[in-house]
Length: 483
Image 1 (cartoon, rainbow, N blue to C red):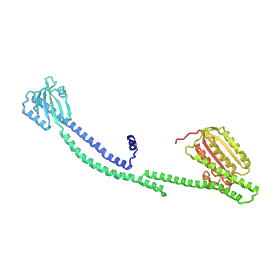
Image 2 (spheres, rainbow, N blue to C red; image 1 turned 120 degrees about the horizontal axis):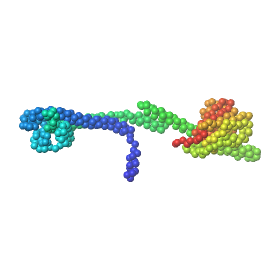
Image 3 (tube, rainbow, N blue to C red; image 1 turned 90 degrees about the vertical axis):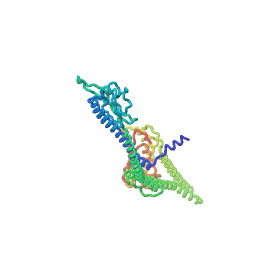
């Protein structure tokens, strides 16, 4: 149960409105928090450095006065003791004078006088160096400076250490004050970020809602175009959706037209057979010759119906996504000779010259059955839609990358306004002539599908009354395209 619940939660998609709102809120609040934290830290460090510098300077001057006044020898000097007390009060801290024997000779707190103090900073002072220490827990800084004198040999001698502490409570108090002010500012920024986030979230997502509504209208049958041009992106989405919708409408229209054509083409032979059968049944004593003639006509209509169904089945197989191709290396020259040999009887019957011209030996990776079907349709059309004494020339050529096949005939040609439709299913240039020779209007559609399955292309050039040329180009090496 826990695993299923986790999966459900994991795949919940956030709303764009929520994402925009959170983004604006985070951008408004987080930088303010970071800046505030940085400013407070900078204020504390700068205050401490400033205090250390000031106390060190004060301690250096005071150490000089201790030497000149001889205080280490006579600690009862009221002027110096008063000076120590005033400094301690001013710093809300403590002043200690330590001699060279680490004995405290003066403590403004009066608790450590006469005691020996061993502390690293004091030892550093006796070595002639100043030092400082920040005690964050007790909120104070401690500065130690050496008390030095000049001997008769003009040498510098350390005779003691001056230790001064200064309270840093004011930094903590100021920090608390600043935090209170910052919290108020953060509250204002947070409220402003919430308001701004709500406004911007609505502004950014409103075009998406309009696009969604427009798409819903299209799904419900409204044909008006989607156009939301608030932003460049929504404008692009609108254009691409409209193009997709137009394409889908075109496909739907083509599908309806295809179904209508299929119904018509399948119904026509059945109607003819019904008429012939009714005619025979209506005759009491039909002559045997007439009976045979009608039965032959019925047989022809059955063959025509069968051809239409077979072509439809071929198209269905080719239209299936991922239709299997049995690719293998094929000698194209031998294949073309075999195909033309099959079609030679048809050409001789039509009194059409059938010629094959091979420019070089060619081997290509193709599905032999489907590729043969495509070329057979082209050559057979060139024969059927030709005149007596005409010709169909087939040429085979290649370069380092492609196989080229050209099928050129001297037939009736194709009108210019029909060329772009000849690969459409059930399209016929001359419907009456096509039916006379048994055409189904599916051959070129099958041919184009076969060529496209091989990642090739087919082009047509034709002049009415002067013949037609089909140019096929197919890669020599078949490469499976990724889905």
